[in-house]
Length: 189
Image (cartoon, helix red, strand yellow):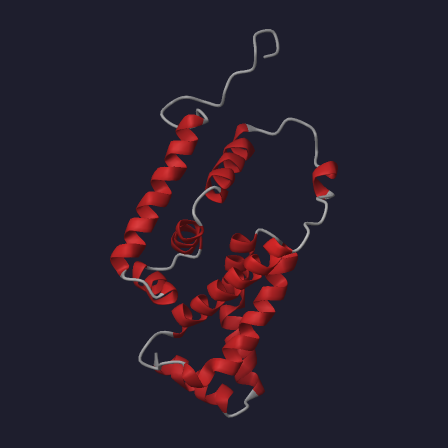
């Protein structure tokens, strides 16, 4: 914590090396989170930049009694929410990459991964956010609770519900409890 406090104080005094250090320390975490929540690398790059601009503008309001990482994650989540809200009002660009996808059959691992990602996409936004923070970003319950300004019990409940929803969707697709993916019609196998 004191290390974070010293870094923030150096930033507040205009130390460009401290700015770089703060960005290097948290950039990967913020970028991956933005990629997951926005599902678009280009948007994630833009939002990641916005997050750090917001972080530097708001450093004076950071409570030094609390860890810096959840505070930064909270800013990132809020910026992603704002971006998603604005993006929903804009027309969607044509997905040209789908036309270029390799049409060859991929192995079942890739199919299972796609099924999990699809199940994740169907979750309520707050459940998806908690799931991503816990399982992909390796944040603790306490860090997630601080970032989302919610009680730890709520975070545990949302994570539990997210897991159950994903499991139900995988069961419905035949991926869980010994059943593989749906079999092709006879004669095509």
